Length: 67
Image (cartoon, rainbow, N blue to C red; front, side, top):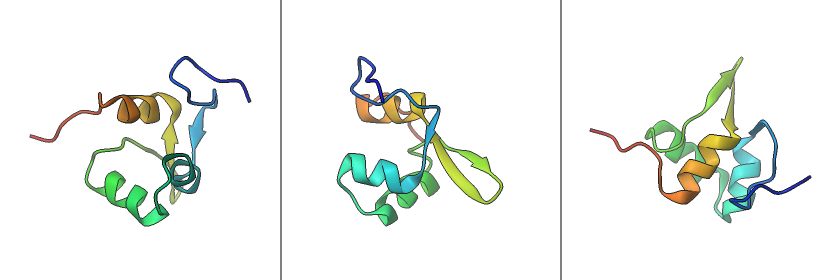
């Protein structure tokens, strides 16, 4: 896997487990971020997938803030 300038592997989307492993947090913490609206996802059937750009935005602190 090649790396982008943000240090995120160039892939279309990640599973919550992959994001948790990358961030060093439990999968439950990733789901809390998703359900709070802090981490944007795409639903594929019943599965959440985190697009590469959404993960990069979140890690850079550019995720949209809730009103």
